[in-house]
Image (cartoon, rainbow, N blue to C red; front, side, top):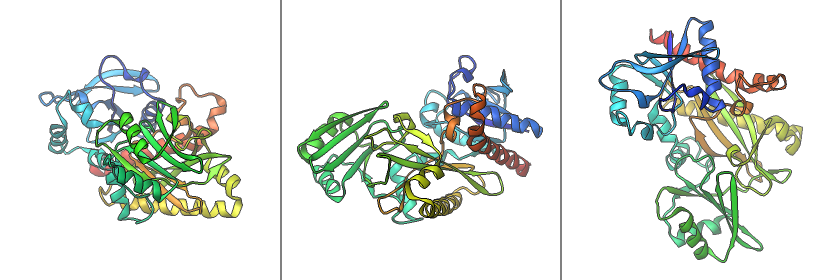
Length: 381
């Protein structure tokens, strides 16, 4: 039983030294699970596929030992590549890659087409409206038009302008209306710069300076959210299918003081959801919020699964609570990092004090992913 794991890195030496903890933990723990069940992973990059060669260069990985090898692509493959089109530009090309998958009757979980769909924030918004019309804040393409900007500024105290595709919180701009005036903040590489602007016209000029005339951004109504000890926060729910049913993991991500962006890449900190909700809302309201979070997450996962039955094993939802305590969905991610500490510390570097956090987040996530891939392989024969 050979299971493929697709990743981004190019050739040129073992990739594991360059991999993020999130990716390395997936590979090591999925491989360990599969070896206990008579299988193993074959780690390879779609960028190394050649149409005239049935074998792909890649790696076996056994408890920290790396072996270079060449193998045909396995029948079942876990997809953890990002920006696959860009990855394939110097290789066989995206369309040829899709034909290659079909001709060999391979399964890629999650399908690249689904990853591309929800990687587009505007398409995600349209998709979610079919599930719950008001769950996702209104957004539309940013047209670099002053009247559009004025309309959004007037609709609420905060407006977001974001790249239409994921950016780890980079290149986001916010316009916040306060009693003292209008403030534009630009988030980039973990830093933020805020400037007071006279009006929408001045804001539009600065936005143009930051992002140019590219029509690759959306404008979105901001949600005035509850704050925990003065900080904004969101709740990342990772839905995981184990081959039989959905399960979930969740974490709260708290922004730095004064920031409206809680991405860990932008300085956000991870904490336990239930503890944050209890501290913020008290026991009764915290239980109700947790119930609603679970209900929306499982319902939405089932709704999305119908697009590709049997081929979605992992999808993440980023929720916030507005000031009325209602859940709002901000983003969907098919390539989330490992939950909790798993995106920061590898299984090889963990210390004894990390073990409870691995038990809470990392082991359950990789166990369900590995079981899904194993059962998918068995059912396909």
